[in-house]
Each structure stands twice: as structure tokens, then as C-alpha cells.
Length: 484
Image 1 (cartoon, rainbow, N blue to C red):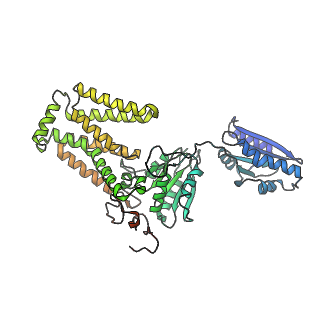
Image 2: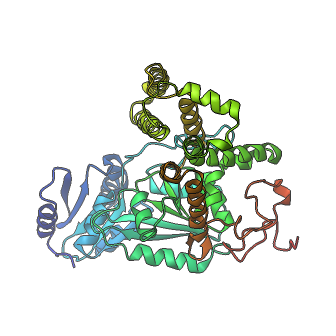
């Protein structure tokens, strides 16, 4: 409960926050009754405070409104659509830190909080990590309400539910579970809500914190949640029966669950002709196998199983390796590490010079390595093809999963040749098949196979009748009476 004396309230709040320089308070006396308002100027707007509170006070004094019950008078007539009442100091400071102005009246043990937050985020801009040629260009921002609006403006359905939770002892970060009530599995929403309520940590600064708690205990390099900054992808997922987590102060949402096939798709697949997208999806699937398997397969064939390679090609490879001091495995490992370092540096340095430095670095490094006789030209070709194939995938967790398995295949092939390569491939497929999220197999709809979905080849939109049965009990896409 709050103190009744305004001076005690001001003293307690300023001491609670270590007399921080951004705490502003002012006491106004109206008919021998004192009113005090407190706000944090770092997150509040002086203009809004003047518009919503000071002008109101001035007008009331000028019009000589009766103020027998000043607290209720303020609460019921202040021109602001976001007004709440605070009963404790914890509630007061949470509102202050959220950009609210708290109003106190002498001899009252409650406070009035009005929304006066200033704009501290960028506006809606184009997505940077998931660029597309055709389709919506807007992306999520750090503003939580704007993110909710970007979804609401696309899905104007009363069954679109937003459920708020607060996570983090100190940051008190707002996390919103978003789902379509008559499509999404209710048990999955209850499980997500339970997992969020069990999180006990000082602070949540990004959706990546939430991801780790939702997937704790998993022993896999591949992600089971999708991280995206695209509101159109979030809405597509909601219509499929998935849930979306929106975390305050981060432009990336979490889509639950993330299936393996989702990482081979792109939001742009929904905005182009099916026949053209099918070719693109086949290329993505081919690139997936190239980026994981090609280095290991080359090492296995050239080190242990040369009899599989045609004679002319084998002679050509032997000529290229003439004078190279390292085994094929060491060659491949050196170049993989070098190109991964180049890739990371290209991401970290400023955009203006990043691409140019990356291209020049790769060309100079590759040419110098071949000229110096450290590696053979075919290794440069294989690593280049492997790296380019990996660029088709944008989710950083999925890309990191590809890196790990590429190296695992490389070591298995270096140890046992084609036998090690095939054994590793069997382990890889078994591992993918064993993954699930809340009873939903990771390889759905490939295993178990579901004929109505567009796993690899997308059907025309008017022929996509059903949703995945593993995600929702509401299967029909085209009308409730559709029985096709």
C-alpha cells in the first residue's frame, strides 16, 4: 500500500531508484489540496504530460469544478485512454519505467497512472535478415504494440487471441502468446504458457532468451522454433495452427513449432506461381544436401574409395594435387575454417564495405592458396559450392546446424571413408526422425507423410484444402463445408 503523505511517496520513490537523474516530480496545490505527479523523463514525453494532465488541471481551475473527491475526479475525467490504478510501489515503478506518469493525491493510498510514453524505437521498416523480391516489405520493430498491430491488420478475426505474460524479475518483459483460438491446439498453448511462467531469470532482453527456455534439454543442433522478423510469415503460421510469441523490445518473433520443412520454405513462396516455386524448392533441397554432404563425400572418395571415381577424373584430381603438402582432409578443414571466418567477418563489418571485402577476401585467399600450393583447385571449387549453397537459408540457428553436421560428415569420412560417410548419414536421418515438439514429429509432413500439404511441391492455392492434422483439429482451409 502507498503512503498517504505525498512527501513520503516522493522520498520513497527517489530513494528506491537511487536518486536517478531522470526522475521528475512536481507538486500542485488546488484548493489547499496537494497533487503530485512523477515520471521518468527518459521514457516519457513532456508534451503528452502537458496535453493530458496540465491542460486538464488548468481548465478545471478556470472552470471552478467542484473537487470534493479529487482522486475520483481525476481518474474519471483526465483525457487519456490508458488510465490504470496502482496500489503498491512495485506497480508504480513498473508503470513509471513503462512510460506512464503517476499521479498522487494527499491522503489517498492509491495512484493514477496515465500513459505518456515517448517514442524510443524506429518506425516500421523493411526486413533485413529475410529479404524477398515480391511480397510485403514491412517487418516487426522493437515496439510491442506496433508488432501486435502488424498482425491484427492482416488477420481481422475475433478468434485471434493475444495473451500477455510478464517474464524476468528485473526487466519485467512483456511476452505475448498469439494464436487463432479455433485453429490452434489448446494443449500446446497451455504448455507454452506453463513454460513461460516457470522461467525464473533476472531479465529477458531478446526472444533468443525465451527460445532457450522453451527448448531446454534438447540435444540437437537444428532449431525447433522459427525466429522471424516478418509479420506475413507470422500470420501464415497462425493460419496453419501454430502459435507466435511476441517479445517486448525485440523485432524477432518466435513461431512454435518450427518443422524441418519450414526452413526450406520462404514467405515469398506464397506470392508466386506454384510451378515456378516448385523449381526453387527443389533447388533449396538440393542445396541442403550439397552444403552438408559434399565436403565429406569428396574426402571419402579421394582418400579411401578411389575405385568409385572414373579413371579420367581420378587422374585429373591427382594432377591438381601434385605438390600439395597436406592430406585432403586437412585441405578441406583449412578452407572450411577460412571461409567460415570470412562469412562471420562479412556479417559483422558495416554493410557499406562488408560485401566488397568478403568477395575480395575470398578471391584473394583462394587464388593465393592455390598458387602457393597449399590446397588444390578442386577443393576451392567444392568449398565455394558448399558455401554458396548454404546462403539459401536465412535462419541463423538452422545455418549453424548445417555447419555442425558438415564438419561431422567430414570427420566421419576422414576416419572410415564411404562407410563412415554412410553411417553418419544414417545417424543424421535417424536423429531428424527422432525429434519432435509437443508430439509433433520434426519431419512432418515428410515423415509421417501427409498428402494434403505442400512440403516440397506447392499446389495452386485453390487446391490447398487441408491443414496439417498434427498441428490442428480444424483441417479445412477453404471453408468449413469443404470435404475434399
